[in-house]
Length: 315
Length: 305
Image (cartoon, rainbow over the protein chains, first blue to last red):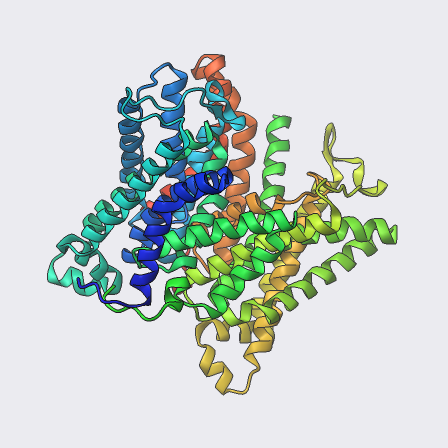
């Protein structure tokens, strides 16, 4: 993997620098809101990046990715509700629960292909949504307020804005680094090979489903982390976090930014959420513009924003 | 016993309604290979059109007929402006583009009709219960839904299987280029099929409207159900959609009606009242998951029609 100077890498470098310097801008200009907005964006970017691993590189079109946001969030929320405030317990539980869920539904869903896969992942996420709605003890439909953010024993204080932002950013960059390593490893090459030509890969002797399943579980776990962050960010978790439109949002972010590119989903998340924010401040009916815009992007902008920045050189 | 009979009829009614929605979806999917998430929006638009046109014309029948025409036209316009450019593209593109359309329609409705829902009152001749067998009354409106939906299902079968148009549609589904080469205007045919699917969705929406309220987002939950149905039935198969729709309608209705009682017998009543709504909502998804695990292509794969 070489780092040639091209529009894409320049965009990625700018992106990283911008995200790193954002709290500085926020404190200099006194614009606190931008930090709040971008904390949310960075968390969603992590979710989008994890979805991109299975969708962009693995060719698995999951329409139920928001389920992990909910699972990670509920793990934090429920443990906090039951009096276990330590992040050292909450977060591993969130990751583990997401991984387990991904393992079970992945093992079932990966038997299907194409649209059937889209629909079965959607069905499982809807099931998770209804389970969460029925948790009467934990707020049911109304959701669960988290009164205390995860406690990391003085290591980091999640209630303070800037450290929390940097924690989210560290998770995002960690996730991207992990995906970069995965994509360029033997394992990642096999998964990408399966996307291109499953029959051929199987003929060489790779067990398709097993490779895909591992990839699916990694992505789910990563998104569970985003869920834990999101719950801490909003101090709240509700079934709405898993609703299918939320999964749709994540898909839009990935495709908008550019599927199968490292930084594409991050750019997509920024573009989508900033656009939503700007439009919703101009008009109450922001979706009236956003909807057709998505349609136009699909019709004319193949490859997303990364696609506009030039053809893929080395991936 | 009467309760069971009533719930069975309710299940049949809901299933047939779902079939109307799923039929349009599976036609569009099977023939144009287009995943249309905005199908639920057409369902919603049908209900909104009916609610305002009935109020405007003062007649239920005229309003409903106008609403059907309006939904058909909306479908045709939608196909012409946007969706026809998506044929032959990746399914993911379809999901994204039609997701955008959902956003658009929800806000358009909010802008035009306001955020509160509308109601569609029934005329007097449809609101009285009807005596089916001595001592067993059933709402005449629900019975009317069953009759209308069955008639539409039969007509749809007849059109697709027995008429020249239907023959062309089926031929277009199996080989688009060939039927184009034979001098058939395949684009027009596709537009008509999409309009037909839209009208069916609109019909389902306006028939459901008096039972529930007409509100924004009403199409989304039921759209997912319709997708579950076409996936269980096998994508592109109308027969599969019909059977799966009845099946799903029955499971959903009976599950909601009888599961709480059943659970209460097995569990403590507190646990049962928590678990029952969740389990009855999940039931259909569970069925779909099981079907897909056992038969990954659905029960009636269209390729083996």
